[in-house]
Length: 321
Image 1 (tube, rainbow, N blue to C red):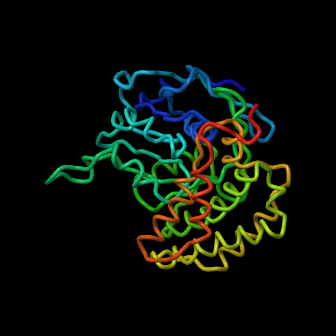
Image 2: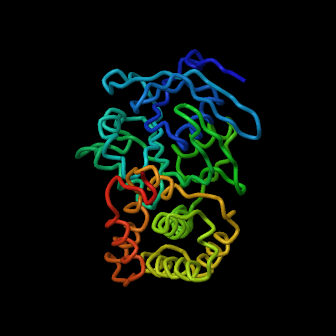
Image 3: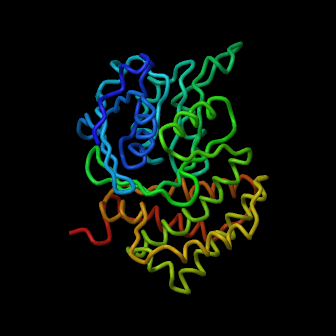
């Protein structure tokens, strides 16, 4: 099913997609279904069409593309979906969308989304009101998305929610649009706790598969499961010391969830290592270690994991030829 670009729909400002990878395309598809026009910002190759397959049905939309931030024009929403470690590469685009009344949706892993983009979006000056700065909406992404090719993705909806936002007016308006576009969005008062719950699985499954060079089947081995549990337990203690409402029951639930992952499933960090791409460990394990230092909690297992990940040869995967 092919849909035209929605640029004529009510002449609304466009949506800037900064990072047209798997997650970026999935989130953008919700706004495209809701009738918004999307402009893809930069990337390795021009993308003029986004094609998403879900529930066995493929939908496609015409989109615009620009390599020049100065030509971006009028946008009222920006989706930041580059991986956390690539945020600096999107600096020019972030500075371009740092305008009043722009909503910046940060669809990245970790618990530091606001802090990560803040240096590029700036702060309102003395005497200015919050309306003089972009409205930042951090997101927890639960979608399982596979990038098939430039501009093409397969989306799997897992669980009962696709995206989670903190409570706020900008988040509510964006959630309404995305819901209209077929995505399941949850607004939550305790967004920080939800973000840390997801972090529990990210600091275990991602590093352990990337370091071993094995798919999810490695997580089913008793010794690896024990290591995952130790990483999670330390993170729960850190979160509690930081005032986050997490319990060790959350770690147990996350550990049990890892056991349900099919053995042939992969993780984003393993995929990145095998493809010789930079790894996302600083936004995940690094966040735990930084927070631990701030609140005075010892995290030896996470420190070791961070040291091992940072020592991996840059640009080399374990099976690279």
